[in-house]
Amino acid sequence: MLGPSPLTRRTFLASAAAATLPPAPARKPNIVFVLLDDLGYGDFGCYGQKKIRTPNVDRLAREGLRFTDCYAGGAVCAPSRSVLMTGLHMGHTPVRANAGTVPIAASDYTVVEALKAAGYATGGFGKWGLGDAGTSGAPTRHGFDEFFGYLHQVHAHDYYPEFLWDNERKYPLPGNAGGKRAQYSADIIAERSFDFIRKNRNRPFFLYACYTLPHGRYEIPSVAPYESEPWTPGQKTYAAMVTRADTYIGRLMELLEQYGLHENTVFFVTSDNGAPYGEEKGFSFFQSNGILRGQKGELYEGGIRVPMIVRWPGRTPAGRISDSPWGFFDIFPTLAEIAGAPLPPGLDGISALPLLLGAEGPKRDFLYWEFLTFDQKLKKLREDRLAQAVRHGHWKAVRPRPGAPLELYNLRDDPSETRDVAASHPDIVARIEDYLKTARTKPRPHTEGSMNWVQ
Figure 1 (cartoon, one colour):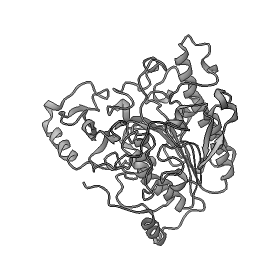
Figure 2: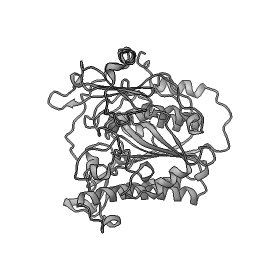
Figure 3: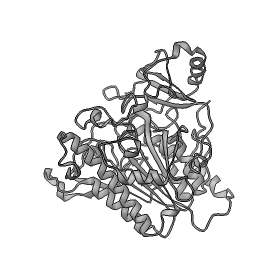
Figure 4: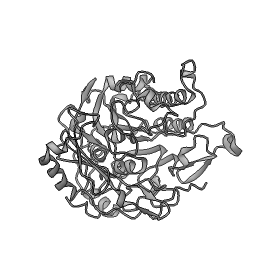
């Protein structure tokens, strides 16, 4: 398959404006999309977590659909979010590596722009990571009516910064000036997301709650829910961060119910990639990635398979578990279909709306991921270190580096990817090798990236 054809936002918006859409209902459904940061597949109670308490997410799972085989866009932050926003998988999406905050281009058309064109109020709260203030990738230049939080992903490592961004204006946090630690950014960001619901309750809205929890650095004002546990300080902190995120989700649920909006709101909860290793937060202690092999930054299941819960009262089957494979590349077409928004051509994703409503999921032969690093000294992407992964039905192939033979795993029998069966299935390997020849296009140069965050 060739890459998507070039498309400018102006060209698409002109054609979309001329399109004739079917009659809209009295009010389109609201969409709440909660994207947590570095939360592992096994960190929620409904995914098997035994130590960390997540009652609100667990309630969502009881009232909606829980997916066992949903995938992030990539194994690290910026590429995964680029896939989510553009509907293009890792072989085509504009941002292919964590390189600071490489801006998406003015011509990159996002799902937020599509929803805004369909009449939605649009708000983002948390970490953006696809363009700093003053660049072509700033969120308010890609469909957001408002964005509050962090623009640069390195800035987002600090939970006690001296400022946040309110659109493209600095929002000072005087309680953190001069090294003070009086204003916890995650709480401030969450409150602004709650305000967005209050302000827009009388019109359809898209709330992108891209909260930074539980990404490191691991710090929180209080570990009160776990203070009496016989755990290490790092374990208590991580658990408290996950539970705090669950509390924010519970508050969103309460507001929707308070304003009578919950029955007409599609509510998503997921994570941008798998959890990292490290005993600082108790990765092994909590089994954050469950039984899955690998971690953040790797293309084994632990790096890219993420929790996904979707609730739409009266539409999604309550309490059902689905093992249909889908991922972030499908979010753009799915939300567009929910909102009645026209789709631009060339997307890699397929609408999963039928899957959300209890029918069969997207039909395709292959799902694709890659992992690239950005060399700060050379200021370029290291394609000589390219790793690739493909899911083909219940088969999963991983090429950890260029030229290496494909590893092959049968996820139906071996979800932990412990047994490489490539030698006994040469036909499957050959089929995936053929696909890989056309799976990607040459990435856009990441020359504007810098991991050196300057306030």
